[in-house]
Image (cartoon, rainbow, N blue to C red; front, side, top):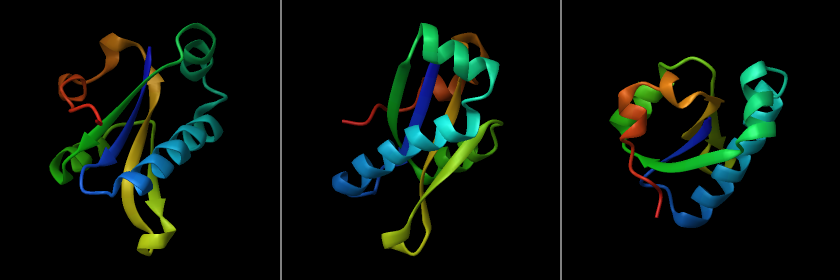
Length: 102
């Protein structure tokens, strides 16, 4: 099981780090009560942080069990999305092909 934290690739590094931290907390608050999250928390705790293009971001927004990350310093602009953990076999193929954040 993995949690995906996806941050827009044009975000400055400092904001991206902060947004990724917020994403993890948002996922815990929003999905901490679910069976998938509890299993992930107790048995896996794997996280993948990706840099995504606007097109990839739009595709990710269509997936279930997600939370959008916004940035107040950018007037509430959407800067990332976190995907609730699920089994590796349950991810759409394009999620597995996302570019890792470097």
